[in-house]
Amino acid sequence: MSPSRSRNQTELDDEDYGPSRTQKRREALAVLTLAGQLIELQPSRLARLDLPDDVRREIDITRRITSHGAKKRQLAFLAKVMRRFSEEDFAAVRAELGENREKQRQENAAMHRLEALRDALLDGDEEALSALIEAHPQIDRQHLRSLIRQARSERTAGKPLRAYRDIFQLLKDLSRDDPGDVA
Image 1 (tube, helix red, strand yellow):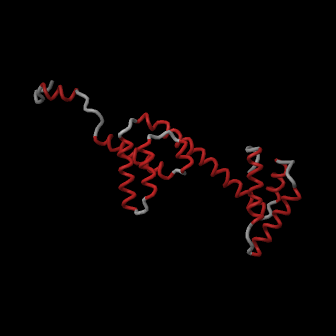
Image 2 (image 1 turned 45 degrees about the horizontal axis):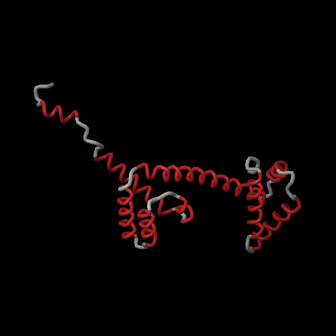
Image 3 (image 1 turned 120 degrees about the vertical axis):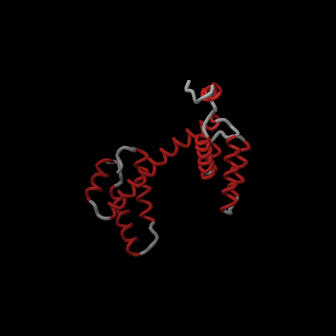
């Protein structure tokens, strides 16, 4: 023991005071972020999550508020209500949101690949067309080519892009049947 420190100070240093103020703030901000994510969820996805009733009620109230300042205050109150519960109560919710975020990212990337393939087909990329036909020999080639022609004419005439959407739907159906081969 150093001469400048008394025995009481040394004993106090050895005691555990719990989490620091910074750690408490980080945890509170994490709960606030989770509350924001819950508010942004679609109602159907929110219904599937296992949440306490009072948290659900506060989420509904927060969603109904339109004023920015009031919504921000209500979101902070929702986070306060959520902090009353233990971390384990929301562990499943965090896991679900994390898995869904990764799944959603993969789905978005797949849709972007399909859009790029559709644009390549409409731009006249014969390699893309032949690769698509080779990967999916069951595809109706005549129907696909007519959709491509129709989409090109709709685009130049300024008509509604029905065939453009039909091509995307066709590619989406193909990817659903065999996800590894499209794009």
